[in-house]
Length: 221
Image (cartoon, rainbow, N blue to C red; front, side, top):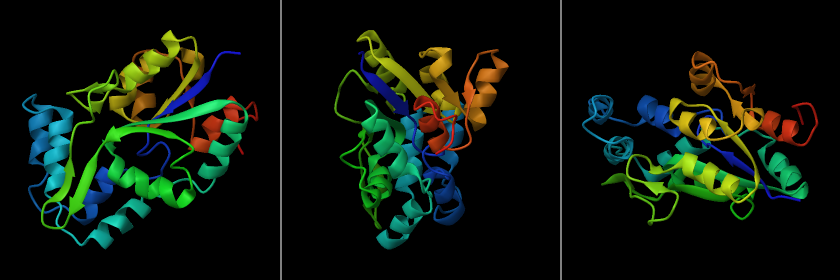
């Protein structure tokens, strides 16, 4: 039987909220989003913009920990991962965000050893903010976003795996298009982007819907 791999975005896909949006609402100072404007104008990469924005955070570490908790992973996330693994699915998290907060969300759920995570490393200190760095060079890294989600999808497909992809953002479009339509799961901005292109996808409301569909349970756990 070929390998089965679910490649999943993290923020807004496995969680209810994006860390970036929570940071904008709660801890970033005025003017901190100027790098995003530079990114939209083509003067910074996505990674550089996120790096500069997160570096502007000034808050006690406990407040950042609370921000990670406020991302609100689905309460059935751990159960869903366990069921997928029992059915032979590998779960691969692919994020252009940071492993700093991903680890703080997955750790309390006991999932750090259950999923494979590709994300930009980060170190937090109240004096210097959340400092992102590019991942070590690999077939899955790129200068634009740090983590090349489409490359992860292609890597597993090229090796004969049955690959599913789930995402919610415009930045997930290349990875979604790199996968076959019947195993392409989308919501929010990604669903809109695929729809505008006339691309087929499977809509989902929350991450356990994806797991349920892959397990043949009709979408819900």
